[in-house]
Length: 276
Figure 1: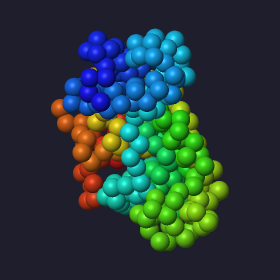
Figure 2: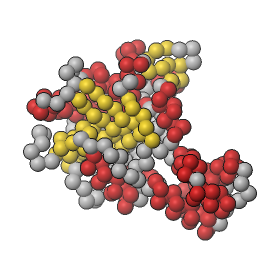
Figure 3: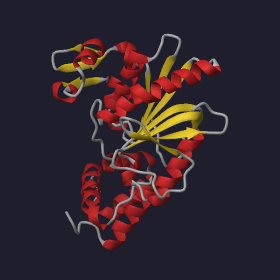
């Protein structure tokens, strides 16, 4: 695949994708970008890369399709168990105390870069299992991949995709079908799927938890910092941020506090006067 794009064409596609999404391609992963451009060019039945470049520059729908194709959608239910143990044993009890103290009745969580829905459905199931009846749970799930969002909205997963789901969750929150499992309607209703590009402000505010795991690794430092700052603005005074286990805010000028729980390391927004 290497050499499919001229140096000039590679730089143009690279810069456009970065400008529109924050996803950064370097020489080390150039072949991935070339492969995706080749596929989209073939689908569009266009003769050469620069003709396709002019096409996506003028066609926002095709640009979204290209961004969809270059995004990575690796996920699974209960991915990184330690994170969900921290969510269960540290974050949820803390939120329950804070909500009771403020007389609030809704916990709002954002799964940013939700892929095909396994993460937000895991969040919804754990929350439904552990939150008291006095607290409602709202989960917003967003991604740049329209194909992935459609899978998530459907809520149907094959046998191999649910292999990591604990048996009691599988029995309680899934319906067995001929070809796999479907998330029950009561849980699906808790999750609102929608398109969002992390390059831009989501418009959401007062979120209690943000999960954005294994996404920042595709951004350069400037895009990472901008994304983290937007998370801060979207989150409530007492709230929690989960990023990928191989990702870190170390060395970044950020207002989040590093929080080492007994299960995993996460981050906390604890504005003045917020409950700890």
